[in-house]
Length: 326
Ligand SMILES: Cc1cc2nc3c(=O)[nH]c(=O)nc-3n(C[C@H](O)[C@H](O)[C@H](O)COP(=O)(O)OP(=O)(O)OC[C@H]3O[C@@H](n4cnc5c(N)ncnc54)[C@H](O)[C@@H]3O)c2cc1C
Figure (cartoon, rainbow, N blue to C red):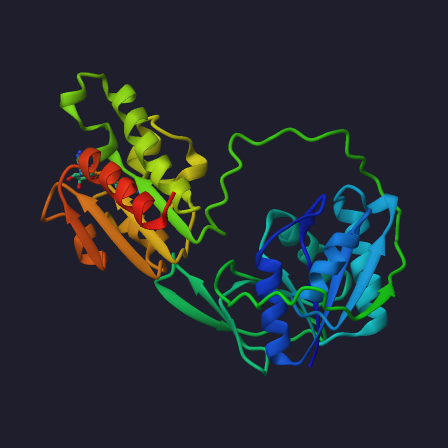
């Protein structure tokens, strides 16, 4: 099986799921990485270290900014001339567009957001909010697939590893021009987080503080943020916390928020409604902190702490700080 893996990066900042895609490619046969951009030596080096045998590189000023038409025509020309069986991408906003545009050029289809792929290229992907797993295949000669972050193991990095570099011709005809960048409302990346500490409506409930709802919630999320940063994790939230204005939508986990799959999910003051559960049920280990012994979250969690999050979260942070020597 000849597989190409598109290494997605923004100005050299690599999407970690690119390495998970590379690990999947290697498990199926030979793996060549594709690196596009301008001044991408560090990305190429990392691709070898994470297991690519060959890197197909287009390093050109015309690729300094991601522009769909330039990237897609370069990728399509490359795939048409080298004829891989499979091209894998990490699932990101850029690759959704890039894979779709190249699939049109290559007269094939895209298997999106896959969580498994067998050697005959039958993919598994969750549908209906993860209630069903669908088996799906693509009839095209070259199969394109975007992989779900954290669904496949990340290969070990082998510092100093090297391989062959093949230069790729750039198809630079473009209609668009990038005028600049502006930071989005929040750069939170829940999809890649290995630890998520989430807060729900309960973060606004601490009458002893004598503060109003929003100020209490701000205190609650400060405690959650301290625990998350100690564990190198991200802060998540229930919809009730987002709707209450305690935190921005970018943090929402659930049916109408992000679907996450961290190693550890700590739910603080979250009841465990089904619409929240479908967003975090792929977590490997769930810990619940809640005042109500009958809250459904305790049925979804491996470990539960019954009590006030305003007491338990800082106690947990202090105990972990001691344990970790921080
Ligand atoms: C179409 C649709 C889509 C939806 N999408 C989503 C979604 O994407 N994500 C999502 O989360 N929800 C979603 N919801 C809403 C969902 O149904 C629930 O209303 C929501 O998840 C409840 O959030 P919560 O658990 O924070 O609040 P609640 O259900 O009010 O629970 C608060 C919990 O905090 C506990 N608590 C209170 N004070 C404390 C304290 N001091 N210490 C410890 N525990 C405390 C309480 O015991 C309670 O269990 C959706 C609903 C619909 C209809």
